[in-house]
Image (cartoon, rainbow over all chains, first blue to last red):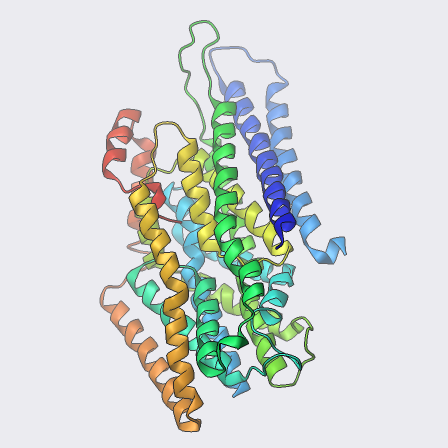
Length: 73
Length: 399
């Protein structure tokens, strides 16, 4: 029985989905804060939000890179 | 015979494509993140790309479930023909009914049924079947569901905004997730290409091996990969509007953040298991994720009755396609007349179902109801949604 592979699948899924969701959520959250009219949010919030979205994209590309045999051999 | 089987396999790939468009695209269409036609075109392109990415699953299909080669049973193209016929018929029936059943299980069911009827029960490698098909079929939706649950909790926890002084809820501003959904659903389409297109590649490779034109245990050839990629892409573009409508109307209370979490988990689960060669059902993983994310959001409930009906539908797919495969196998075993009869009857059945479907045409123009529903949910205030939630079908209903 290939329990180890199942555990691997579960772990990889959790790690990949978790990091993407956390990064994207942070991005959404920071964008929301930056968009608040009422408060004067610090000016670095919006770039940080974009950085989160960017990192999220990088995480996705990284995952694809690992999976595609053409790149990772 | 080999050419006939290959064209039949490509047709199966086509039905698989339009059957499963909904998996990736029903959620973003329902939340209004993306227009139906654009969604389908995007899914088609990504399926095409995905099909080229990996061949692990194809190897599982071509070398494992049915014992082939010198020590095993000699599987003939006729058996594969019968299996494919069973799978296509079941796919067409479920499409006509608008049921999101698993194309993969239809395929395996058809093949196993045909092999048992045509060769005997000893021809099926049950150990490999258990390990590579049945167990992933049980665990993959569970894994995807659990991950989707956690991700939904995370997404909501990270974006819930309260006023630091009064503790009142601020406007949550989760609209960003709608844009994110375009990307995650694209990932699901890509993942679908890597898993489902490969099943057909595996079948064609199996035919080539059975016909003796390819070495036992080798992977798919390039022209096979390309043909399958295009077949599934065209099928996806043709769009299973019927199934999109079924799923879309069941999905009206999926929120963008929830859909985002569910789709990310689906894509991650499918991609990682494709990488290890598990031939799992993309339909079932997507359903698992949607149910998981439904459990993860407070105030939304999963209708377990509906979820149970879907599960029963899944249980039926394997044996039903198997029976059709077996019947075709018996017909085919009688000789050339039988093959002609089977091919003729199959074509007639498919044509009949196609014509029957024309009578109540569901296309992108009336699947648009889904989009409108999505927008209605978007603009209505919270209370209205809460009321609507009571009436709408549950998210457990599909995807």
